[in-house]
Length: 225
Image (cartoon, rainbow, N blue to C red; front, side):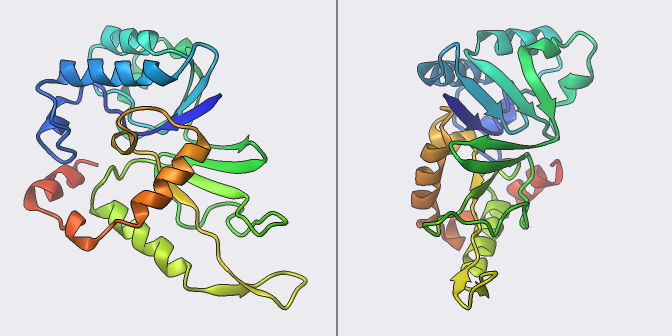
């Protein structure tokens, strides 16, 4: 089984009070909960693709230790906070591969993987014989901030347009399947592609501007990204 998750930010205790407001009493408590949630789903033979920003600890033994406690085969799409990768003592063998960008197949669908949302992604127009999208763009980075509201508005706007299908006079809507795999959306549990698709559909129906009105505090946090 293959799972996906983004922006775990292990050891980033400030996220309990700022930006995400995760609400744990400490960074250690947050780490332990995320490890428990991960291992409640993932088995040793499973695969988990982490879409960037795995851990912010400067203690490389702590980073190695957390990775060692997480079940499954792990793969990393590099995020802007994965600075531990440059440390010579980091155990890179704990990841099966480490990439900035990757395209994979998942149950007859193509997956575009990037830490950063890509508005116009490779294969976006492709559909199967039933007219369903064949390509999905999985991303992280924006957490649940105003930037995620902007991505959502982009998808809604794209859905208002129709284009002619090659070799046919039929006009069809433009697929735009961008899914934010932010860990808090799944209560820190890695999910399959199908699970993310279902969760994303339900979540986007509820998004409103009032949920994303930027505060001064949020703006300060965003500048650091």
